Length: 386
Image (cartoon, rainbow, N blue to C red; front, side, top):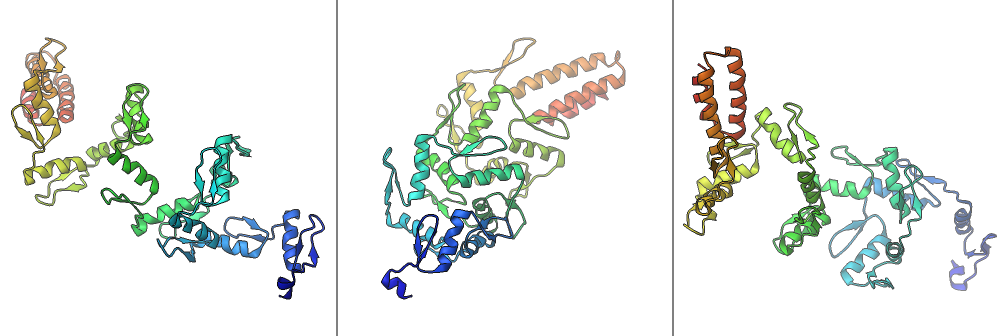
């Protein structure tokens, strides 16, 4: 202890001449030169030069976070991380980028940031040659190739390649949503989701389609939109082989086959396959008609009906028959016309064709009826077949 006061450091490293007050400190220091890491984690096999470093590391797997912020209650596994975090509240940023003047709370973040300007990516994957600015990012990336997922949820046993992904996942079970919008008070489990949400209020749409210039708040929405131009439909129904541009559309479609209607009205118990259909249905009970015509003031519960109604004033008839060139304001009208034509043909062919052939035509018509929800027409065709 006296050496702290006297400044005496009798134990010197024979490689770099650095001196220490204790022999044990010299022993630990020598490992930086030899590369020896005798303390190994029994979960992820990561090794350390000192036992205390292993103790801190183990908290990542156990989830123990003993250092808690007294301002926002966020906890950390390391005291040094808590010290850095506190600067968020104090606004203290000691380190600044000399290129873009962006301030940072710690020097390590500044060093990593500078690589964005220089383009330096010194850590390269030896499997796929992908490079990274940080060694930690490379280590996480390597788990893609090894399939290693060392971070496991203690509730549902789902595993993750990164601890941050596990932390975010745990919020599903706890219901914790720490990121709140200061405009509408809506909360989110992830900061990235909050940032995307804020664009609803700001109107910012940074992701633009290079074909039609339509813009989106999220890159994922742009990716989905692009499929409308290229015709890509990667999600296919395993029952009827119908394909979709989005997985959500496939999930909704499958309910046609399963009969599942998870969205139920709390007034009349009527159920629906989609939440949007339930919302529209509820307006029957509330009497809310939010879509009003600015010409004749007639109101509608659904936007689609309002859109069709406006064609009465504009005289627009976008649905044209490919046989007689007659046009209609609704696609349903065109389908009904074609169905009547088919019924007429069936009546005339009844004496010529075999019943099996007529039945095939009938089934094709029924499929059209189901697709366009023209349920009342089924009886007319059935009577014709009979």
